[in-house]
Amino acid sequence: MEVEAEATAEVRHWTADVNGISLHVAERGPADGPAVLLIHGFPELWLSWRHQMAALAARGFRALAPDLRGYGDSSVPTDLAAYSILHIVGDLVALLDHLQLTKVFVVGHDWGAQVAWHLCLFRPDRVRAAVVLGIPYFPRGPRPMTDSFAALGDGFYINQFQEPGRAERAFARYDVATVLKKFYAMEIDELIAPPGVEIIDFLQAPSSPIPWMTEEELGQYAEKFQKTGFTGPLNYYRMLVTNWRLTAPWSGSKIIVPAKFILSKNDVGLQSFGTEKYVKSGGLKENVPDLEVSIIEGHHFIQQEQAERVNSEILSFLDKFPSEGGSA
Image (cartoon, rainbow, N blue to C red; front, side, top):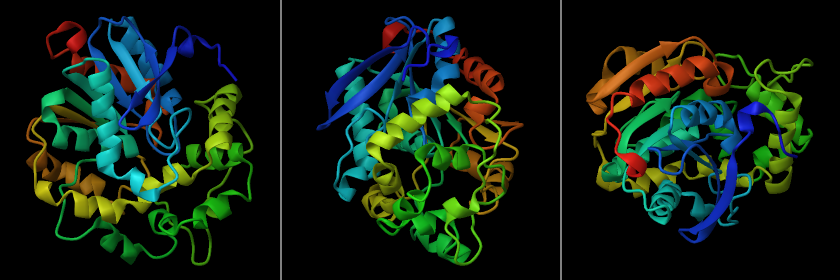
């Protein structure tokens, strides 16, 4: 299903063989413009950036939005071990090499925020500046984050996602569009289900359309997840402990690239992740010294719900960096 709305007109689609997989990329804007790599989250696709791609292209930037491994029209490896943060960041570095881009601007949201931070951490030489939405950078601590999540109980979504097959079986009780709508429409403080309840059963699917997404757009998402299933995306969560082990060399490391963090006031998980306190207390700036913070209205899927505000926040930050042509 192709959405012919203005937001996705002029989007070019292609695939590249990188890092042992096939990566689908949506591109918009002049091929010689400064490149902006847009990294989506869960459960999303390149399409989540449709509004930003239009705004960036209109300002002369080259917007590049891949489907991450496990998603959409990119490869979906069957091996759980293929979903480590090193693999995912490796895909993006290989994509930049494929495009012969030395440095790019990076924008990430949700899981894509984690990927963006780790791209900055592993390869600061490839990033001019980063804009990160929703999930702040937490340096690697003495224990995996999943240890602290244990205190939130079995109802916490990340705890439920750890067991292979569990969430997939729960999701399968609903059609794919309903599963996606339950996540996209959530306006709750915490993703914690009551005892004995699966998170997908706890989330409500509104009877009316989501205000910031057309039925056609929802259908486009659903078509891709119908094809790929949810195991690849859920495997990102199942690799959290492995990621902690693999990132031991970067323990306590700071992010040295210029960054802007956008926090939405009504995002889910502000308490369970300690996000709000960490950002407002200056903890994030200690770990990302060259940092700007913007706190805006909205919920979780902020780049779609508050597209114009997010576009403005991104463009005003990128404008601070002099143009270097296609190498960005």
